[in-house]
Image (cartoon, rainbow, N blue to C red; front, side):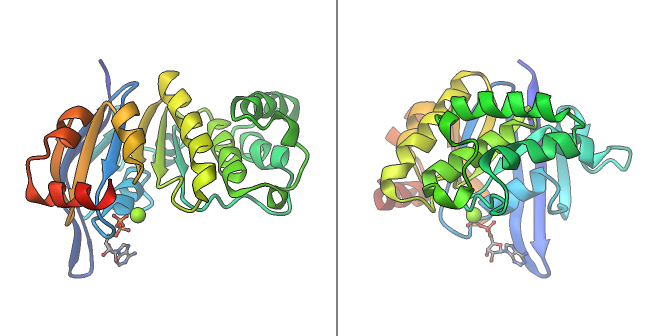
Length: 243
Ligand code: ADP
Ligand code: MG
């Protein structure tokens, strides 16, 4: 198995506040890692470090063999291989669904408009929105918009997908459709890191689960072990609150 993401002794501080206090993590090719933990524990900061939206204070991140701290590394090339889906989907409101998906492949990847459109339509079908190509995003429900956002990210052909609480802003009845698409993506072999409060999804889809609290990985393992036999009182307490 090839290691896709390798994190060693990752620290991140804002001023005097240390938010990440030394994380070590490996994600293998085709693996799904779910990250759970209380608000403020550093989960989003961790994801932002992976895409170099934040520069670590200390430590090493190697993605696809590229060391992000190495000045020789072209961060943009590494970034192109990482797709990120956020809680708030931020579709361009003045563009149609199709245009939202084709914009970056045409402008950044130099795909022809025809090529990009073909891919976009295929991806829209994949997320169950084949008939919505020509509508404006605002006419869609939150869940549908998030599915478009996932399609838009996939249109860049990422090798790794990061999800930061992708269903947290959705009405409960929308959550299942988005999770189903993520599950399909996992089954198709996408390497994924998913920050989520959806414990059912983590149990079912994750290869490994990481419990973060206070900027540290407190516990890590297979979902069955972590959820059924939490070792630390911290995790026991957390699970009692969320399940
Ligand atoms: P989580 O995603 O687990 O809720 P975050 O990574 O968003 O946690 O935040 C972890 C901590 O880092 C919080 O205490 C937050 O206030 C702090 N933090 C995050 N971003 C910044 C920033 N840009 N400047 C200062 N503090 C920040
Ligand atoms: Mg967060």
